[in-house]
Length: 281
Image (spheres, rainbow, N blue to C red):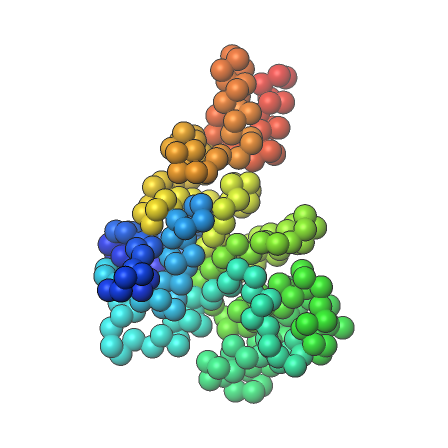
């Protein structure tokens, strides 16, 4: 499995007085099993990019390919694509609408054409995988806590059996406990299924803690693309783009400037701690 974007441009309100270019000459390849973080300030194009990946938006120009096929071919099944590339929007709980949580989670696989039995089995499996208590399954989704609503919404996407899971700011608006639960769940999903996960965020700490590769968007274009340790070493470029590296990166820089032989590619607090203990041992 791979997703390829080739010289993609996208404009909102094209050919009107309100036209705004959101993406400019974006070329990316995302391989099977990768855990990729896409970061950027507000308006950098990262959420637009997410919606291009499963065909919700159509590029103004350029190509998008899934498993070697052009998703813009006239006979390409976009419905099937949206089952393969699952997109969890920012504040996904705003999209809950079912009478019960279980009914809501059934909607996706049912819409893809699965039988009632298969749909229900998928819903059961997805709800168990996100850890939502069974006591919640047959209650209104609007009676759940904020964190539980988020889990129910993610279960609705997982029930479709996506090969790629795209999460747009999955912890937005949650308290620290809720954030930890969501990222714990994402890590569990990645570990157990090894599916491709694309995490869209503006939080440097979140991507540093979880992903294996970072794509930095700036004014609709790819600014940087590489491993976290390599990307965050270029913190001056990030700062010019209105971003900042994780605190651990600045700590390591300051220590190295003072002559301590710490790992300059440490990006998380855990990595920084291990490096400092080794340097002072």
